[in-house]
Image 1 (spheres, one colour):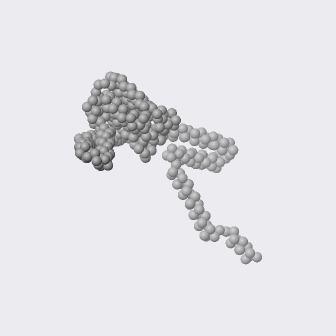
Image 2 (image 1 turned 90 degrees about the vertical axis):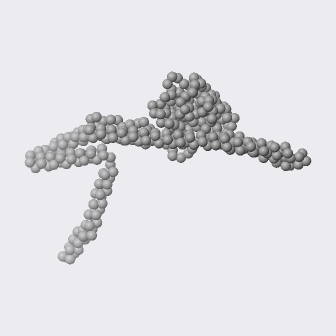
Image 3 (image 1 turned 180 degrees about the horizontal axis):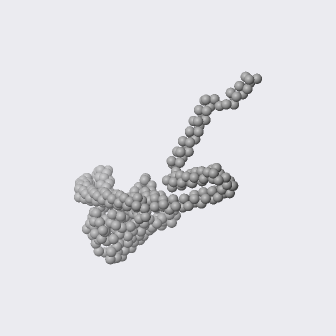
Length: 370
């Protein structure tokens, strides 16, 4: 009998390994709870900590009241529960108000991350520490933006100088060599007697190929850096480019220019020409449009322009946020150039509704960066 009772007691009581397993499980559960708490936002951590303090204090108050005063437990519990709920509500409201400036900082940084570089963190005057944080962030963002603008300006200036050099070499050296080749083939063709028609035909074909290559080299030089832009100005350069664009793509372009006969600063003419060039290139490559309109208007202090097509349209946000694709790089390049002369550029488009690009640039920018 005693043996059976001993066996039952042994079977019921937890062994040492079982107690160890339970302790490890308890510790594992506690660690998981702590890790989940660590991953919570700071606002929730503060609210949870304050709520735990309120509940602990209320529980201790109930216990002491029962032990010392012996009051009605139900009434005390109801009173304390109401006080705890009210305290938690006030705690959440006060902490939320206290953390609102940090929420503004987070929202501003999210906007900057997706490309809205002009956004700045709202300055906080009520909280000294958060105010210092906002001022430091804005100062850092201003410094980074200034360095980015200088770097972009240097890169674009070097790019334009290199374009100009290559275009000049193509025009002065390669074109002249091809012209001499065409003339030499023509002379050789005339020297071949009529009794050798095969040779005359072959020379004629070679002459046509050289002539075609000469035209392609000339077109390449003009696209790299049109001499008419430097010699005659923006209006003549855009008219020349649109004429060539229509001939090559069969896309009709309605060009409207108002008060654009005078010359503009060189860097501004380059920016406007490149924006129109890139916009029409995108029309030809991506839009499937049958026609488009280019409008430029100058007043005393600014130049305003729109480029509109009747193509398939696209989502500007998706293309601008994408890191891949020539179209996205082209749009970023247009924005970069316009921002460097303190202008603004906006894309209005959507699937099936065509695309409109609006730009506005001051004639005299604040920063003569290039």
